[in-house]
Every structure is written in C-alpha cells, then in structure tokens.
Image 1 (tube, rainbow, N blue to C red):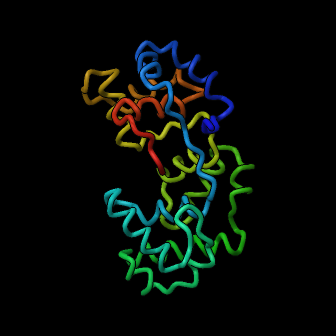
Image 2 (image 1 turned 180 degrees about the vertical axis):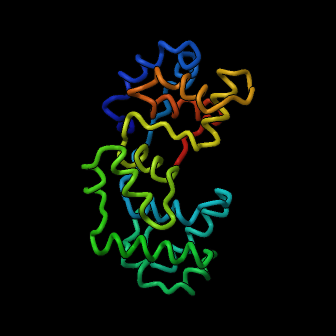
Length: 211
C-alpha cells in the first residue's frame, strides 16, 4: 500500500517544476515522499537527545532511553520519561542538560501545557514560537516538527546546513552566497517551500530523511 502523501504534494510539484533547477531534481525522484511522524512528544524528545551528535550516536542513546523507560521507539509515553531520574537518563548517554530538558518536556506534555492538538491548531509562526519556548528546542527543531509532524507546506529552514549546501551547489555553482541571495532564490517556491526543501535534500542524499 503506497504511503500517504500530503494533500498539497502533486500541486506543489507542478508549481515547483516551473523552476528550471528543481524540475529535473523532482523528475529524478518520483517515488520519494515526506513521511508523516505522528507522535509529538517522541519527535521532540528524540530531537533533544540527538542534538550536536552523529545520527549513529543519537540512535544508540535513544534506544537506551527507550529501554530504560520501558517504552516503544516510535511512541513513548512522557510519563515514562518523567519517572526516570537525571542519573538514570545520564546513564543512557545523555548530558545532564539534555536529561533536564527531557524531563521539562515530559512535564509540559503531562500537564497539557503543550500538545499535538494545540500545535496543530496554531499558525506556523505561532507553533514555532511556542516550541522554541521549551528548553532544548531551537528554531531548527521547531521547523522540522512543522514539516514532519504537521505537514505544513511552506517551511523554509534556513538554518539547515544541508539545504544551504544544496542551494549553493545547484543555484550558485558551489559558491558561498549571502542569506539575502538565498532568500531571493527561494521566494518563488512559496507556498510550497517544504516540498522544494525536500527535493533539494534528496539531491544530496536519495534516502528520505527522518527527523
């Protein structure tokens, strides 16, 4: 059974194919698609655990956190994380700061100060602002949440190293350019910047990204 696509995907491909650079990239990857991540807490908790370390290290640490909490990798109950002490979380390989961030995040979800439903009802800017208020969640993580959990169509994560590298490679022959120039190139992608970003990521790595 084919994976579900965001409702805007086909329209976005048509819109973005007007861009002479994006058109051949889109045609090169007809089967790839944005995968929906369903559990808000797990997405954000895993993002905190994986900050500033390699994907391999992050996967290993997260597996130990899940085991310690007796949860499931794809969906873990925030109560299970909150019940772990800082020492137990540190024993999984987390720094003390990350352990405290995870406990704080769990507390917010348990107390319903934040939830997937609340975030889904917010406009992009409001949801991003609410997320970055949480300890350990920065703009990039918030943008990944908007893309992968809420399937928002017009997210442009200019703090993403891979995206900037792809834009420089395809539009500027690898030259370093200003953020102003990058914004100018990206302006016509709206209202489907998310899809443009997805295909530019694919141009660097054909395997779908999972955040």
